[in-house]
Length: 512
Image 1 (spheres, rainbow, N blue to C red):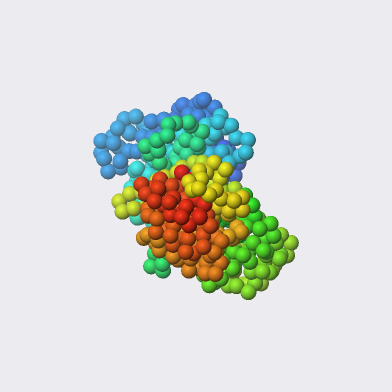
Image 2: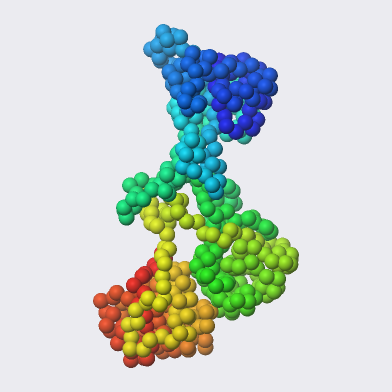
């Protein structure tokens, strides 16, 4: 019996080598792995001695040889295969232990060059893994050091059963697929192509944590991150305190982080069921938090709070009277963390300031029955100074500032989305309604006595003037919307009649 061992990560390899040798396996290996085993006193042969061919091209070619791959791929239940091996004096290989060059670790370095990346694309390793996994009924393939112990136990005892072998083969193919996806993503990120979406999208993910369940208790759930390393975002958050995060906690915390990250000025939001129910911007974070909470104090209970600046002790104290599930921020100043940790179950997250950008795993991917919808993220440079004033009255400087704030807010509210804003505070919103009039009505109801003097943002155009008429009744003074309806003239006329200033962005922000 032969075992081929060739690993970059040497974790546990000496003990495994000893155990395989003790179980009667002849070990063959390459380069650094051979040195590690040999230096540990484990009997091992060089692959080049087995193949009769030297390693060439600085080690790029060593296991790519018929003696190796014939020994891996030959079907033991085929008399023709076995006879052919005998005629070429090729022995079978029964165990393959391989892990791959550190491609992801290499490209994660800030000063990595293309040559560095290309040099760390493993060729021989994936080829051996695929060959062994294809022939798993006869060849045990091991890629994960955490499997070494139980595999060694089985091989030293009654052997691996077919279910165990198939499980190891599945893990090997997944390992290679994720590795190849990371390579493809890296190469794609530096490649300029036309405006078409790619013909194929490969997304490799690594599980970082299991969740108690998914969106509901009868669903399974887990958190995954890009195998290519990714570039931050909520999935890479560091939990500093509190109970285990749930699927819904993570979804809402991501909504909070994305919302506040859209603002250059200091901003705080309160999220409930993936929608901002409170949002405000002030230089003083405690004041911004209080205004965000005051936007909808009823909905805030049990919500998630997001900050785009380090949380101050004053802001942490202000949060004290309210029950929240999660707080997410870039960091926590002074005594802020200690103050928040007084709440035993509050989940406290710290997230790198930059949102992910670039790469296949930053696509917006939505499942549908039988397939997936894939789109680029809703990220676009917008300048409020370039918006078109559609009405007779132009918005004042104060109104324009609030319109810009409201326009960012409405992007993060489920369609049909309406936002009422006054002095950089979200005071009412309507989300997820089948028609826009209902969203305007809900925003008015939520804003209550604060509605007069607000500006309004709509994520898509108004199809009828009844929306404008209802907004005018609420006391709205200015509106921002994409424009582009066949009834724009009627909508503009209604705004002019009410004395409302209205601007067109030319951009829509649906969020389904």
